[in-house]
Image (cartoon, rainbow, N blue to C red):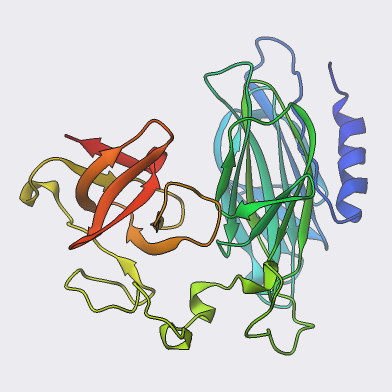
Length: 319
């Protein structure tokens, strides 16, 4: 099916006003190495691509060359509140960015939807990353676990993605998946300033989620792996740094690859569902390798005598 760009832009503007976001796979003329970008915001914003001013919101361009761009949004008369991020423009695909500016960076939020090609041309996938991480994720209304999450077998077509966490505004995204593509959803939740105080404990699943900054080790009534003393270097935010070079390690070992967050979550079990995080390891550092299975998980030794599982797609194993 071939979509008319101008009609699609109007549809997206209506959806943005309703607080949701749509991502669509579109067909462009064969041979045109072009993709499209839609940018929306809750106020007047100047749009820059690679430091070049290209227009204002609502912004739409269906003739962008494919590749990675630096997108910068500057509210009218408020340069100090400018926001920027990397976006990828793919052939025949519409990339959608919806930014909600607040009184400050914490009260602002955004959603970026990108489609990227995958090897299996009959499969449809969804990958979700959020700031903060470890927020409740609902796919089509069903509680599925905590971010970051990947869904490798989803039906092509319309889906609803919900993200929620205590102290933040809930975000609901209406998205469309396409065969042969992974829908990459990157979301920053906006702080809910209407809440004077975030409850310390609650029976609901969403209120049990908190960022690392909000959860101090001494607040836990039980011993925590993160709070345990260890000779392994840790940064101020609790991220464990492995060896900075593989030269001093006996093989096999794993290197932590870029995740976009600066760290990778270590879990007690080979599953991304549930609150089973035991540590975070620093991107670019090396750790002893234990084993790897075919389900997408790698076991490593993150501290002396302590082992855990990480997502295999974010590590490089050398045996």
